[in-house]
Amino acid sequence: MRIAEAVDGYLDHLERERGYSANTVRGYRGDLRSLTEHCEGAGLEDAAGLDIDVLRDWLYASAEAGMGKSTIARRSAAARGLSRWIAAHGGADVAGRLRTPKRDRHLPRVLSRQAMDGVLGSLAAAAAEGDPVALRDLAVVELLYASALRVSELVGLDVDDVDLERLTVRVTGKGSKERVVPFGRPALDAVLDWMRVGRPQLADAERAHPALFLGARGGRLGQRRVHELVTALLEEIPGSGPHGPHTLRHTAATHLLDGGADLRAVQELLGHASLGTTQIYTHVSLERLAEAYRGAHPRA
Image 1 (cartoon, rainbow, N blue to C red):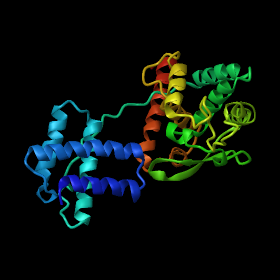
Image 2: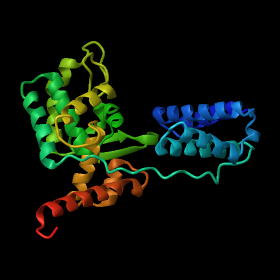
Image 3: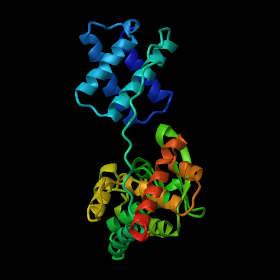
Image 4: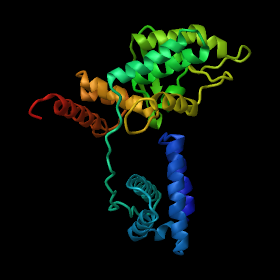
């Protein structure tokens, strides 16, 4: 089997059988295309000739090209997955001893409660005029913060995914895994105003669309528009770090832990496969505690 054929088979396996998202498969495709080109440059086209030294050379060349640890880690994961797939189809798993570099782990940016209240207050004031886009934007940000959703999860919501009585939304997350997450009364009020007043004004009267959030032309709201909205809101707030929608997810998780929520409950809410991924928010909470201590304690 040629390496290029193995790569195509593995990517098809990820998409059709493992349910990986289109973004993840796209990232792996780029990584493994690079691996294929590296092998061809070394005169290697048959998957049977792939060995750990070739893989290490490829990762070394990637690092020398200036790629960061997170990219190298993803490429290493892609190579190990490909190697396992080749082994399942009669070849050898040559990447079992391929080490993944530890990623640099930075604490995520988190807004204070006062800052978050300010963001939501400004959106509520704009929505009070009844403009459909303002009503939608308020509902979008309220739901992002209330349920700690990823942007892809939010724009993927359909009207039928929202349970207005139980105050929950059914979310399709990474790997096409479904989970049900709660939201609060402020988010409920914003979503109801959007659905009753704003949404009918943007909806196409001749072609019903199942999406909860609609764009200006009546189709499903895009991720790019949500990024633009949240980025514009957060750029006005002092603080280092990214300004995008993921900041609201980080903020929601941290505020939950600050309020005494159980770590595993937050893990379930966020849809993290590993508790270790969620634990970064405990570090954020401790950092905030240390900052408050340094600013308030006379012997700090």
